[in-house]
Length: 130
Image (cartoon, rainbow, N blue to C red; front, side, top):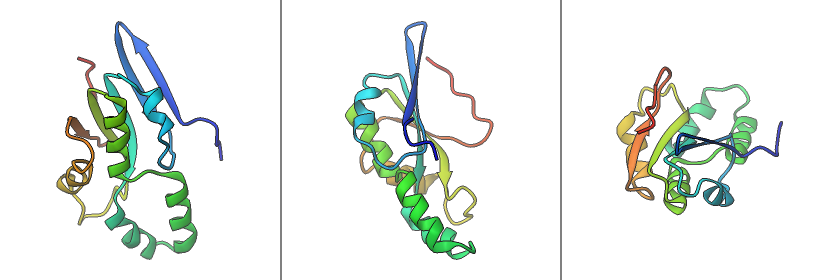
């Protein structure tokens, strides 16, 4: 796997967007994202990981990969708070296909660490840079 790309930052017309790559909680990302208009950050929900692992043939290996390579929603919120971004967009949600997990679950997790503007992304979402 690629281990040396944690995020990309795009700036245009006085606006900035930071996209986190798949990464475990990485506090220096807050410095990179400092003051961005939008932070797009991947996220996992702890309560869904065990159900995801249980329905997968390689459960232990999958759990190890997820914990080493992804951030929990609360951690994405912490990065957004520490960076002072204007908006947090959660994407690449894990698990994405668990019928028992809805937007309120994602929101509740993030609100533990982030009080600002929040969007829970789904495929096809278009985010306007205001």
